[in-house]
Length: 292
Image (tube, rainbow, N blue to C red):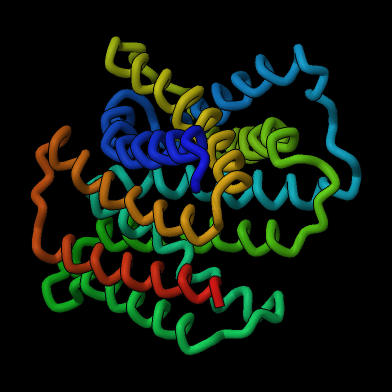
């Protein structure tokens, strides 16, 4: 029987991440995309500092864990957030959520190539279904190939998913000496420092309007969608079976699509729903294969 606290955390995590896609879209109307990512990482790191400092756990990681800190900080923090925020300027929030959550599809072949894990028929079937879903979302026949902005935005979301997958592969292959929670502050700090020169050179100084809407979006993204969500993810991964957690994460893009329809009025198109279904089936096939 599952721990009720873990199930409650998992449901909260799915709701927080799913709802955040249209909230990110709202926030980008008030500040440049890279500076928005900077703000999110800064608030998340500050939240961890407030929690870990009284516990005496805010200390530099051991030398052996620094490669992992750099990988997660650069790929899953800086690259993923930066690419996703830029893409959200030209790609609908619901579609962005679906494409960004293709990450598990790239983990299976990557694990076979770099970690020596077998690429079974189930995994191959899952990757095939997922790629079919991506193809449906792109809809090559109906896609405006002359729209350079939309094409670039969709490509950035795929790169963001690949960056997150690369981080997962390193996490799987790493021999841990420190808990994930104790490394989170330093990973966010690495992402913050890495994005800072890019944000300044590309976007100039930050130009936030500090409106009421922007303030609540920032409050949601920093402590809740970054700090709390990371802690919740670590906790449920320890308390619930990996397959259960992986399958539950499939609800995040579904929540993103529904939340975007409710908050932003984005249409629930047949293409989006079919693409989401195929991707969900692909990720489910990969996750279920892990049981064997």
